[in-house]
Image 1: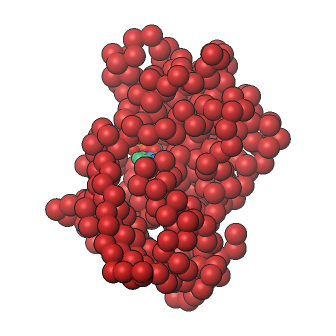
Image 2: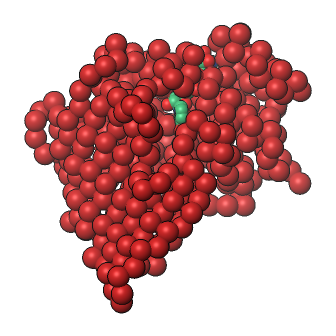
Image 3: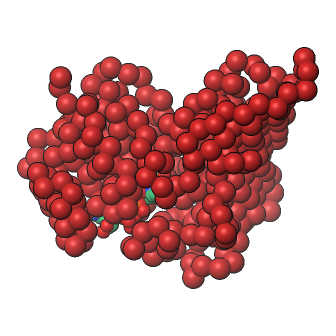
Length: 342
Ligand SMILES: NC(=O)c1ccc[n+]([C@@H]2O[C@H](COP(=O)([O-])OP(=O)(O)OC[C@H]3O[C@@H](n4cnc5c(N)ncnc54)[C@H](O)[C@@H]3O)[C@@H](O)[C@H]2O)c1
């Protein structure tokens, strides 16, 4: 079978826990090379995958290696430039979220992917959680009736507990956004994916309560969705003692709690024909456990590039989610309700 020859640009934490191991074990992709400006980051990869070639300049890797695709895993400020260089050199691209630091950059990336006829996908990996696949099935089957309200939260104690080089997450110049683009964007995307509804209007508040950062460490938004239902999201780096990673959907026939009662469970409460509370037990949602990262995103990306599957998440989905967080910040700054375009 033809395997997609892949390189990774950015040998940090997400490359280490998600991209490299999932490419390594994929039947549809193979890991050829990796780049990081910081040579010390490459040592770990060379130890774990002795067969890969390492580079400190991604342009050299793009020029010298025969790659079909790359994972772009650098800090947010380089997502657009690196992805565009990779697309222009004929590679398909799986870029980490947020796909760029602005909608304008994201639109440029999409244009180049179309001009070059290459796949551009964004790693909105929560779409690949079994929980969310099941939740989408339940909503699509109409079991909850019409959606009336949605609540979602992603919160933990901050990225400094995640990566040794996480300080860039706190610098607007490198990250562009704080907890909103790190965590909130996942929940915005998952609400669109599970409900099939679009975001129409928003109000929002953010603050920086604990981190030495010039970006927000907590954000909340309230939205009107395209069927009139209301939604709220919380994105927090100031959640202590536990990790919150949940989605609750209140429908006209019942309620579904995904990961909010227990992280490894979907709870469904229905009113009719009889009062009913059932649960579907799944693997835990906690982000720092290996299990969490064992997701079929790489296999899917490879199959999309090989023309075997249609994308579950597109670059346009990445742009919509990015545009929503930009609009939340406008809503806060201008203290008003902001309309969201698609
Ligand atoms: N999908 C998810 O659930 C998820 C989870 C965590 C992080 N992320 C995203 O992944 C990206 C990387 O985050 P991380 O946690 O791995 O950060 P990290 O700091 O651990 O790693 C980033 C790496 O990129 C390298 N780098 C920076 N600029 C470079 C360049 N121009 N060329 C080559 N290497 C360069 C840095 O030296 C560093 O090793 C971010 O965009 C983040 O938002 C996504």
